[in-house]
Image (cartoon, rainbow, N blue to C red; front, side, top):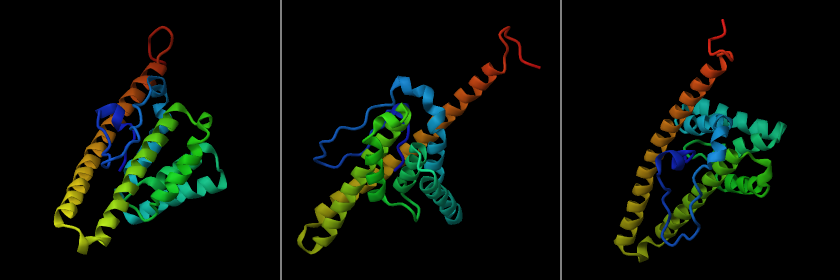
Amino acid sequence: MLLAMVIASSGCSLVRPAGAEKPLPPPLPDRAQSEWPAIAPLLEMMSVLPQTDPARQAEIFQSAKDAASIAPTTSNRLRYALALGVPGHPGSDPVAAQRQLAQLLARPETLLASERWLATVVQADIEQRLVLQAENQRLRDEVPHEPNDKIAGLTRRLAAESDENARLRKALEEARAKLDAVTHIERAINDRNPNGTRTP
């Protein structure tokens, strides 16, 4: 359930369980868009981690974990928290991710605006996943006592969230492509001297 930049770039919204009252995170603030390069490696990790082979997954996750342990800077702790929150790999632990993100967001002044936005969006996504998982488990425990329509309703909701996640992943790839384009333009501008000609 990667969310990264997708709300701002695609207008997609996260699936909210029935009765959820917590508002969705705001779009990426305009003032934070200049900081996109700072979170580009985080977005790359979140995109690659659930899709690569198990050996590479273990390598990426262990690298984030070791960095947070050896040099627990805010950036390293955020990277590890996001790695914990990404589903689809053996190291995923949404409860631990939620706890660590809460600790980071308790001191928002230590985060860049773009990092704070990303942490907020991921935290909201994790909370919703945990709610759905708890409801799924409750319904499974009550299968002998609940009508089939409740099970079917949950199945539909989970299917809808799966579809939403596919849209979010696609939007993430589009956001990364936009970021690459902006970075390319910035490099081209930086290569020019004040007279407007390229540096030899």
